[in-house]
Each structure stands twice: as C-alpha cells, then as structure tokens.
Amino acid sequence: MLQFFAKYKFFGIVLFILSVIIIFSIYQVMKPEKTLKIYQPNDVTSELVDTTIQYVKKYHTIADFKLVNQNGDTITQDDYKDKIYVADFFFTTCATICPIMTGHMVEIQEQLKDDPEVLLLSHSVTPEIDTVAQLKRYALKKGVDDAKWNLVTGDKKQIYDLARKSYLAAKDVPYNKYDLVHTENFVLVDKERRIRGFYDGTDPEAIDQLLEDIKILKKEGQ
Image (cartoon, rainbow, N blue to C red; front, top):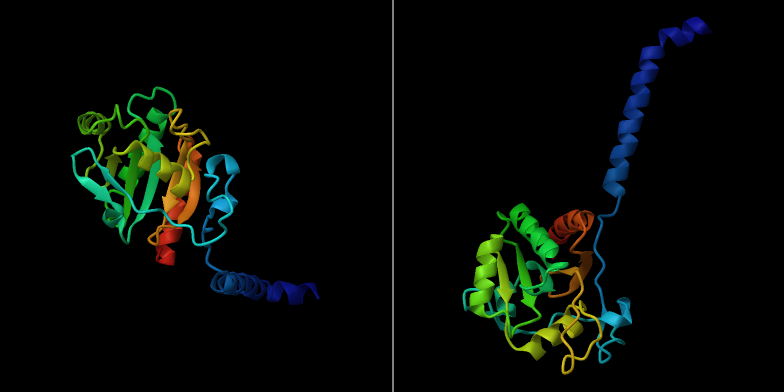
C-alpha cells in the first residue's frame, strides 16, 4: 500500500494543485462585482441633512450650481458633466483640519493627474474672505492643477445650501445667523450626480479607500 501511494504521490500533488486553481477560477468568475452604495439623505445622520430633505429615500442628486473659481471663471454643473468628482468644503484661512484636507486633495490630484474622467471641487465656506484673488494665491501655494481642480467662491447662501441640501457635508447651523460648520468629509459623486461615498479627508486610510472606490465607479461606468 505504501508503495502504491509513493508511486502516485507526484500525480496526486499535481491533481490537487489543478483542483485548487479550477475552484479559484470558478469563484472569481461567479463572484459578483463590488458596487458602491448610492447615498440618500435618509441614509445620513440628521445633523448633516437639511430638515427639508431628511425624509428623502431615493432620487437624490447634486443640485445645479453657478460659482466662480480661482481664475475668475464661472463654474457650473456642466463643467462636471459625465465626470466622477470629489467635493469638499473648506476655507483658506482655516488653521485646523483644512490644511490636512487640502494636502490630501493634492495627493488625490497627483494620483489621478492623468485621468480626465475624475475631477475635484472645493467650496469656500467663507466666500466674503475667499475672493478670486485669495483663492488664486492659495491655489498657487498648494499646487492646484487648474485643469483638474476648481476652488470655488460665490453666493454664500448657495454654497451653504449645496453643503446642507446636496452634498450633506455640513452641520445644522442656520446660515443667516452663524458661519457654516463644515465637516472633514470628502464626497464622491458619480457621473449621474449621485453621492457614492463619504470619506474623512483628514485620514490617510480613508483617502486610500476613496481612490479604490473611484476605480470601482469607473468599472461601473459611473
């Protein structure tokens, strides 16, 4: 009996390896592709959602907008048509989380610099301070690629409404009384203007996950 097993030992090893390869290949073929969640206001903590839309469970998209970038150019939703993009809210004089967030946006810009399918969009929450000239100085200092990344300013109410009612990225503080309390969130938006992810813009691991999720969106065609 021992001689029999010794004789066919090599054959058994080869058969085992082939079986593992075949099983793994079948699993890979049958395994469903990973997809990203489509976020609705109802999915997000109420603190970050305007009371007028907290009930919304489907069909939420980013609203139309008209703002001005660091070069004085008018930027609208049409500039992001058929693009995946990452949005956030910041201000140039922030000395706490914003420099970290901006540094991570720069990293994303560098990682995706040759990918015309993905853009970046940063909204100033202090538009009365962040004029076009101020945004330009900031953009030059941080190494912003104008073709990839718009820093935008404009009407304060429009920006605050975008933060609360579209991107779901600011805490519930009335804009007619206080300045907007923006979060550290980066928001991933697909080509249909739907939110597909929220990421801590101060966390390097979250940035890595964001980059991976962009790859998933590209496979989805979104």
